[in-house]
Image 1 (tube, rainbow, N blue to C red):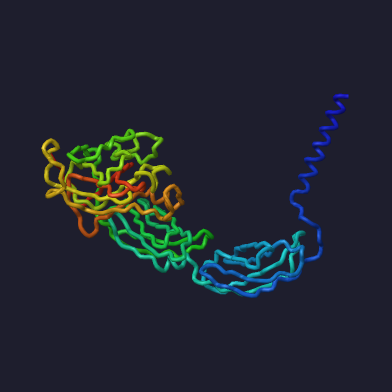
Image 2: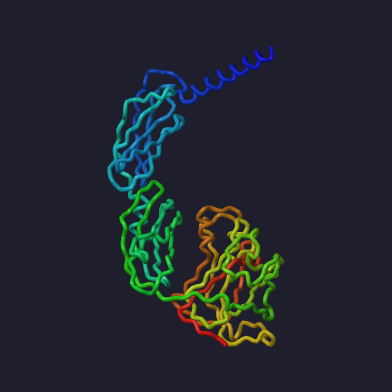
Length: 405
């Protein structure tokens, strides 16, 4: 009897399993009558997209409206529920006439007769970006800037030759920001040609435009020469396990990875916090970069510097006798703001935000190149609203470096 019960249960499970599996892809109903045609009442042409307004047949069996168009041999299909009377088509790569076919589809997946309408989308965002591309030589490479007024997510790729003479893509910028500027660096100061193109999420690509520039000379400072200093008035940067030397160890890491950087604490004083260090060399600076502690807790949040200053000094410092005052020997080289691309409140991050944080804050000394040996970083405001700071890493580049005894 036990064996019979087991056999019956096995058979029932098999019937249920195979019965269900056979019904998975069937239409909801089996109505052999196709619905009536869609009637187009309005077409709104937008940058790279169109919105079509229509009426559907008075048929309770209609499930959705489908619209298709073909571009460069690729068919794209869009659907809209019967609860709405508009459908949005995206991904047009050129400003031109396109034929769009619309169908009403019922619950049995039966299509109506086709309704064809001609649309003419406005200039697509990818072409808007392409038409605003600008370039200029910069330290170690080329700077590319463009405008993206639609806020579409656009990739801008940069091409150049490698040492074998083969074309490769050293960098691609991905952003939905209205104004974008980025630099591709790491090249010698010899004439070089760069190709630049734009691409959208639909795979539409522009032509490649070529620029020939001579990158400006710069050299990275040797961080092994950097030395800690503690002058009167300087903040203690060892809070929460921080150490000053961690900010020049070439490790851009998160809190959990250890030896992440320096930290002045969480107690608000109402006055700017600052600390000092010796570069161990006299440098005419071309660039400065600062990275936050690289995790979601600190990106545009916590006591990561939001508005801060970089000061320099060439006059020799005696840490024992120096009174720590800024004047007359210190000079301000720049003001820097840690700008969050999305503009969202702290604690909320987009892909653009994370990419910008990973790239770090960069200041390029284009107008005035300061010569300095000592550095002082001053925090005027952090993302928590006070003046404490935690920093993950700093780097410097220069057009001229002189050793010191």
